[in-house]
Amino acid sequence: MSSSVVAAPSKESAVDWAKDSALGWVIGAFVVALLLYYFIGVDQGAYSVFGNDMHIHEWVHDSRHFLGFPCH
Image (cartoon, rainbow, N blue to C red; front, side, top):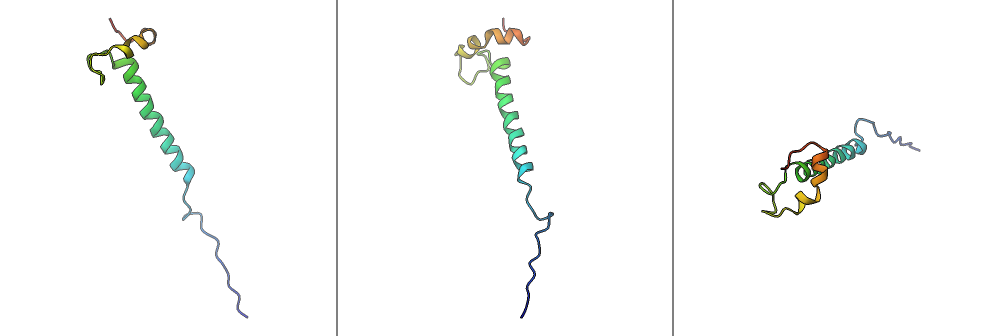
């Protein structure tokens, strides 16, 4: 009779999925924050990706004043 012993996996070789997932959430939140900053603070029609369309400017007009962005 022979007995085989199975070694337990070491903790060093295990993948830490929680750390990778957290990094993805941080990067995603940063990208969304940059887009929001652009649409609220920077997009005034002159540098807009939508050309001379001022809909976004008018949509967030009061928010822009509240946050201290000059828009007039």
